Amino acid sequence: MKDINSSIQDTWFILKSRKWIILMIMVLFGALAYSISRYVIPPTYEASTQILVVPKENGTEVLDSNQIQSSQGLINTYRIIMKSPIILSEVRENIRNAPENLEERIVIESEENSQVITIRATAGSGEMAADIANELGEVFSNEIPNLMKVDNTQILSPAFVPNAPTEPNITRNTAIGVMIGFILSSAFVLIRHLFNKQIRTESEAEMILGIPVIASIPIFERQSFKKGQHELTNKKELKEGEKYVPKTQRKLS
Image (cartoon, rainbow, N blue to C red; front, side, top):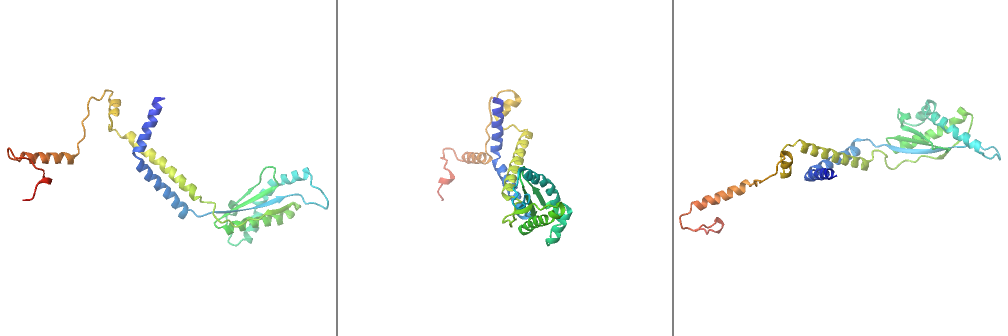
């Protein structure tokens, strides 16, 4: 347990000693992710519409559980029909400048034991996404009586033009960029420390050599050493019996 705590403390000390490098790399990756999300990745808008699948009532006929289960069983069939070429080709013809890969921009969803089908459409603009979702719902509702010989669908809620894109998520991408920067910079600092064979502390010397440290030699700064040596030289140049006066206290003659 002590070894684990010591390793964690050593790792934290190493990272803390290089905190400015880690922070700079985190900011760099965060700014890079923000710039790419904001100016490089094209925005994607999403709009959705809902279609209700119910049996058509005839006169005073009351809906029972069998009719509801029958409608729920048709939902998987309807999901396949919505993305069939006969439906998508008509949607593409009715929408001006519709994308070619229309089937890839449409997602059909339905919750379990639900009679509601949700159509989600994505596009490069909010208007196009709403047009695709609404047009697909309209075409499907108009064509299903001819295909299935039954009229049991109606649009529950139309799609509206979204105000903001769903992708890219700038906040999420920036946070991911900062996290990646932290991971990479921390890994770089730790790997560099592991491959550095210099002995930096007395404890490292004792651990590597296996013998105790008896004494250590302090490090003198070169400027301080030269300054002291220069003052010593000036003192030697004084005549015998003459008092030494520093330069800062000497009067101009």
